[in-house]
Every structure is written in C-alpha cells, then in structure tokens.
Amino acid sequence: MCCRADRRRAGFTLIEILVVIAVIAVLAGVVAPMVFGHVSDAKATAARAQIEIFGLALDQFRLDSDDYPTTAQGLAALERRPDGAPQPRNWRGPYLKKRVPMDPWGRPYVYTYPVPDRPGTYDLRTLGRDGKPGGQGEDADVASDDLPASATGAPGVSPSADAALP
Image (cartoon, rainbow, N blue to C red):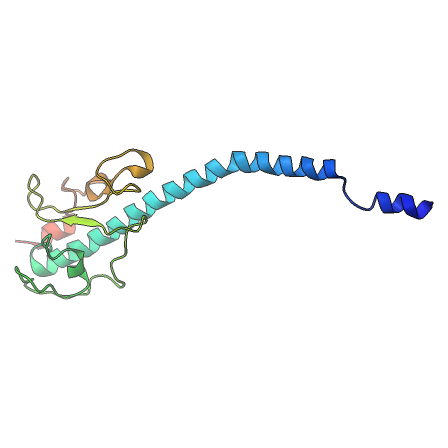
C-alpha cells in the first residue's frame, strides 16, 4: 500500500501542468510585444549607424576627389573607382573595409547627389520596413539629414571636409 501512495505523488497532475502552461502563456503575451518593439528599434538604430559610417566614407571620398560620387556612381564608388564621368580626381579607395551592405530590412540604401534643393550635399536614406517613402514607426525613413547636423549646419557635409576644400 505504501508503494501505491508514493507512485501517485511521483508526478504532476494534469491541473498542475495546465496552470504552468497558462502562466507561461500569460508571461509570453506580456513580454513578446516588448521584445519585438526593441527589435524594430534596433533596426532603425543599425540603419542610422550605417548611414553615419557611409557619411564618413563619402566625406573622405570628397576630400580626395573634390566632390561626392554622383547618383549614377552611387555608393559603389566607395568600393571601387567609378567608371563613368565625372572621374574622381584622386581616388584613394576603397573607402569602406567591407562591401556596402543592404539596409536592415534587406533593401539597398538610396543615395542621391547632387540634391536639387540643397547644393553641395548628398541624401542617403533607407525607406524603412515598408520600402516606401515616408511612413511612421518602423515604416519611417531613416535619412542622413535626420542625423545630427555638422557644425556647418548642412547635412552630409562635415566641417573637416569643408576646411580641406578650396
């Protein structure tokens, strides 16, 4: 008889298992939205960091070549000497240690130079999760002109690059 009583208390009852599963489900329901919210913030932060790195490389390109790469030359001009006109005067690249990556959402960055309404500056952006201009939250664009402005007040132009040019 004593063995039978011990055998009954050796495991968990169905009710105990269901209570534990319910508690885990409630915790997952509370924690999951917070975790996924941080993932979207992390992607936007990664995009800002990459745009800043590209900005430094673009400024170095400008120091060496007297101008930024054109829209047609694109960010590829940071990896290899551009083929098309205008040819950079003194290309000393590659200006990036690795290839230009896709944005955190898996699309290429959008680079424009010259910018029609802002002479002497470039525009570098990612279109966010939805891949469309504008948007809110995770769908919002992350652009070089959204980053803190340089001392010149012109996005995309660093003070050191301005000081080195005639």
